[in-house]
Amino acid sequence: CGECCSNFLPVTQKEVNKIQEYVIKNKIHPAKEMLVMRNTLSCPYFNGKKCLIYEVRPLICSEFYCYKKPDMESTRKLTRERRDTVNMWGIAEAIDKQLRTSL
Image 1 (tube, rainbow, N blue to C red):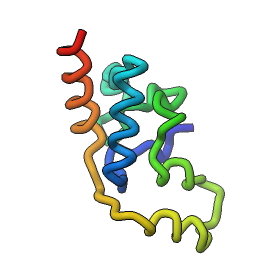
Image 2 (image 1 turned 60 degrees about the vertical axis):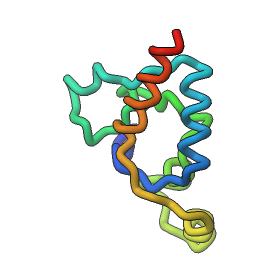
Image 3 (image 1 turned 180 degrees about the horizontal axis):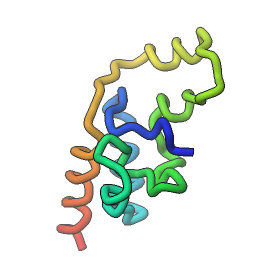
């Protein structure tokens, strides 16, 4: 549904690297047209209908369900590695810039 597709996510550097590789390989650009309908608090890889990076989405995205109660296993997965809360628009714009200059 995209209701939880936030711009600010706790991610590992490994996840950021996987996203970068996937985005460049698949020539995915941030869903900038969504800015007209929504705001920059939405993830740049949510196009209003689906996640553009679903296959490599961060663990926080794959573990979170609106209807699911938190459990210890999910908590363990999310706390195993160091996570920094990042601005996904900043990451997306840097990757997009790199993608556009490599064309």
